[in-house]
Amino acid sequence: MGAVPRALRRVVGAGLLAGAAGLAYARCEAEMFTLRRVTVPVLPAGSRDLTVLHLSDLHLTPTQTRKIEWVRALADLEPDFVVDTGDNMAHREVLPHLLHALEPLMAFPGAFVMGSNDYFSPHAKNPARYLLPDARSPRVTREPDLPVRKLAAALSEAGWIDLDNNRARATIGGLDVALVGMDDPHIDRDEMPAPDPATADADLRLGVVHAPYVRALDALHDDGAELIIAGHTHGGQLCVPGFGALVTNCDLDRGRAQGLHGWPGARPDEFGGHGSTWLHVSGGLGTSPYTPVRFACRPSATLLTLTAR
Image 1 (cartoon, helix red, strand yellow):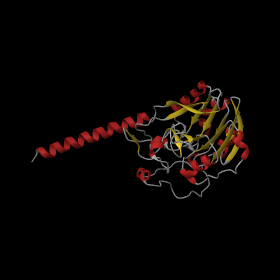
Image 2 (cartoon, helix red, strand yellow):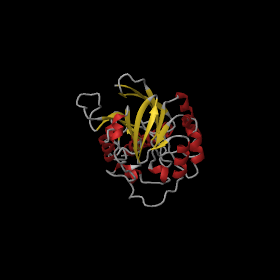
Image 3 (cartoon, rainbow, N blue to C red):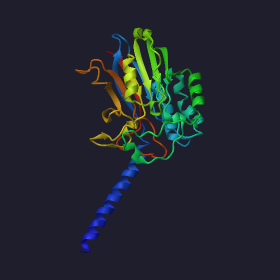
Image 4 (cartoon, rainbow, N blue to C red):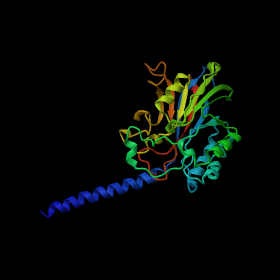
């Protein structure tokens, strides 16, 4: 009888050791910043390539000096345009550090939308909530406790376009680009701007939103966006090799938790994809400070190369 408890202890001990090793690795992976490169055939025939740097979900705290320096170094890519899809802040005193991180990139044209964690500081949650069909907290009615207005003002003063429930027009690499964005659907701040028939004449129609909720993607698609750029999902953050993301923290399907896809159907260049638009979802560069781990899902920014169709 004594052999059974010893065998059980070995199994339990091995399981605990494996769990500790996995947790240690997941903590390290959260610091393995990666640049992804994606090509999107979305420009008019004969156009030269454009590069768009997509940043999302930094969830920055003042002590994350390695992340700050990594983001600053992205300026070496010399993108034609920068798109920041929100959730930049994870600490009430982080704004000077965030602006220091973004400062070299603000030398380039850009646009931004806010995410919930640009308005409200993070707090501890039960991780099991993320497995629910709708993991959101009850509708937020309190005043923001993060310096979101100061962040928006600083980015705007640098020349970046505020696309929160807004439209704009920009010349990028000699092309006329119509931009439309929405504030964060995750906290019900999204409102589609009034239609503008003039956007039909643009060389490119670009939609931007933080959280890729179905209603937001449908609205941008119906508006005529040829490329939609979003964040929020963290690529799933904790993924299973061979299976992928467990959740997206919104109603987007798990298969589109990260990377380039089509919306609402197949990719626009694939058979049966007529009527779909391109959708790029960033895996993001951070995590909540209360869950500073990633598994099989490295933190990332993406350099999108837009090419002629």
